[in-house]
Amino acid sequence: MGLRNSKVGVASNDVYFSIEEQCPLVWLTSDSTINLNKSHISNLLQGIFSHLEIFHDIDRRIDYITSPNQKTMVLVIARPINDMTFLVKILLDLKQIGAIYIYSDTNYYPETSEISNIHRFKGIFTDIIQLENDLKEHVRILRWFKPVNFTTTSANQGTNDDDHDVGSSMEISFVFGSLIRDIFLEAPIYKNERDDFFYDSHNRFANDRARLNIIKQFKRTYRPGKAIYWYTTNTFLYEELNKALREQDFDLLFILRFFIRDLNQQLSKIAQDNMKKENTFDITLYRGQGMSKADFEGRIRKRVGGLLWIHEFLSTSRCLEVAEMFVLRDPTIVSILFEIHCNEAFEKRCFADIKIFSKNPDEEECLFQMGTVFRIDSVECIQNNEWKVRLFLSSTNQEKHRDQALLYDTLRTSIFSEPTILHRLARMLFLMGQYSKAKEMYTLLLETTSIEDRLETVYLNFKIGRIFDEEGDPEQAYRHFCQSLEYLPPNSRDKFLFNQKKNQ
Picture 1 (tube, one colour):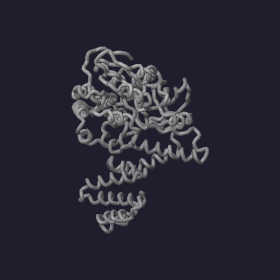
Picture 2 (cartoon, one colour):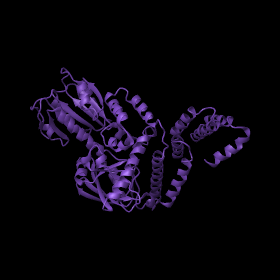
Picture 3 (spheres, rainbow, N blue to C red):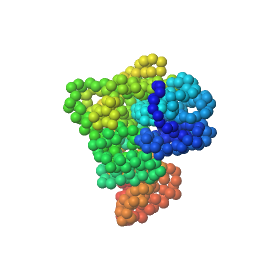
Picture 4 (cartoon, rainbow, N blue to C red):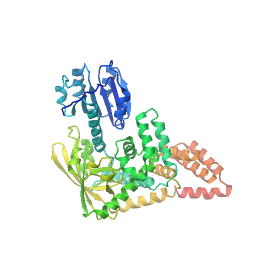
């Protein structure tokens, strides 16, 4: 902390930048008479915070920060501001504020003692370039610190009815997660699949110049061998991918399918190259992570001996000191240091040392493929609210129960009998009970199917009818069943209905 000395004109008004939906930045000042060079700041922070809004009213500003639904934000207080005392009193009690910066055009800033006592206070800056660099570092840390979507199973599941129900739910979640991964990694390559991404991105971010510039750069420079570089760059791409994986947003995953495949293939190639060069069969990796107390107690501490399955790509580091940087000391959460032991006895490595391919080589990052499974070996309290969780890399095949493996194989055979990725996704969504989404995909397929393709029209109408039937809408189900039969020759109807009934 402390002053960063330089002469830079102060920004005015209230500026809200949104980087990813979980980390907005709010720029506060009460003086609306100083002209804000919006274009200058927008360009300066491009790639860190992509969306810019200006507020002139102090009440709107305070209402925005104190909104009960507001997510954790970064706050920059810029001079001049004449309501500092009032603002500080509010800030002291706000959990929404993840970090506080002061930006001033002089070395003098009154009433900072109250702010200095807040553990989230990051310092006073007089150089906007220095401020930019610190914000970049903060966002880089947040990339690691963001919650990871995972599923855990108990070591002794099945000892009573409740455990059996929870265990069954976890196993089903694991199976469907594995199938989601398979669908996107094994999706047939289409010539224009990147165009889907660019078209969608330009529509969604039509009014976001900074993000459109990044998309333009991505379109111009991207190739499959640069997937890791772009993944580790602090742009929306990283956030969009992991958000889609966390939330099982199939529309967005479909748009990003080329990037998922490229990233996984590059990781696999590097991983195999790493195995040939490594002199040791045992590697220890680290990750600093924050977690809610409820999640830690229920999903980690009580699951020692069980499995932990990661739904997305997982960033770790060979360097303990790097991981400890990301263990955020915050009394409202549990700070966790994951110590991950990787035994190289497995035939295929599921992580890669990406240091020389990364945008941030100093992190000494190793990246795990999505769907990696670990066993929770131990949980140890380091001090107060800080814990060390020891994980061991686990072979998915070794850890699968026989019934689970049978379910996976059966569902995979059914899903992969479908011809395209959309057919496979629709089939899986139906099996998952997500009827509305499955119906949406089957309807899209029907709308894009030529009426001359009679068998496909029959098939899709029948599937839509099945969904309406499951949703308890017999009239719509009957209508689609009739439309399905209309396209069949009379002598084919009994055979078709028999086959569909058999494959339900």
